[in-house]
Amino acid sequence: VGAICRKIFRIRHITTAHAGDVFTLRNSNYLKKIGSFVLRNSQIVTANSRYTRDAVIAIDNSAENRVLIIPMGVDTSKFNPKKRNSNLKEKYEAEHLILSVGRLVEKKGINYLIIAMKDVVKYFPNAKLIIGGSGPERENLEDLTHSIGLDSNVIFVGYIDDSELPVYYASCDLFVLPSVKTKEGDTEGLGVVLLEAMASGTPVIGSDIGGIKDIIEDGTNGLLAKPQDPEDLAEKIIKLLKDSEVRHKLSEEGMKTIKEKFSWEIVAKKFADTIMKVIK
Image 1: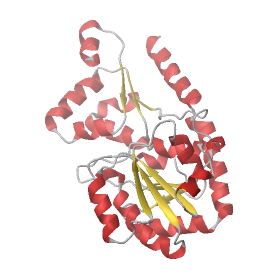
Image 2 (image 1 turned 90 degrees about the vertical axis):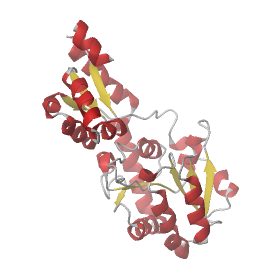
Image 3 (image 1 turned 120 degrees about the vertical axis):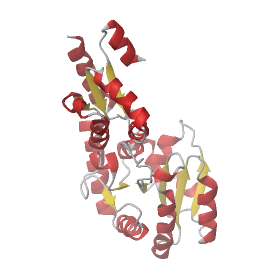
């Protein structure tokens, strides 16, 4: 609609791409033509990561010089270490808490994380994986958990209320986002849950895929794991649970990354500057 208004009324137009929308367009010749029309009638196109930027350009390479990377941001007044609550471990009777939050769909790769927990519990029998969120894969994931005997270590809590989410982030020892690339080509455009976890002072592990690589600098502010590789994922989880000093380092660097690149104040200024550039 915005592109049509641009075409007819010559008003200024900015398009923002977040990933899933781009992949849908890219995989259909008909929709790709619509996407190309939109891109050609946008003064500026913003993408939330390098990966999304490249996907946009694949739809219409004439947009290459008009695509700016502006990520999503995080509210540091809401997500921060002050929300930590030791009662959460008591609630789940856990020595170590590992958290993963998101819609339970194929691209989140939660099945690989559940399989990885088989090795994790060999070293940490009282480690618990909290899976927050709902979606079409939940039943399959619960069946997988039961089939490998991890019912007491993998806990599906469903949707976590917005008021409770900051407490979960801040109170867990690790946050893991084990995303994969689906056969349709869909994957993580950025990974906002990683930003929220990092802002909360929680060390993160994410798959070396998609826009996650725009957030995590491996070994500095988090760890990158091989996609679809439960053994590598387990190795990295065990490494961090064993070493509190490394967890502390990743936590500090993660919060620094948020402050310098992903706070809403910084992201909002980038959008404001872009809008002013188009208006002028």
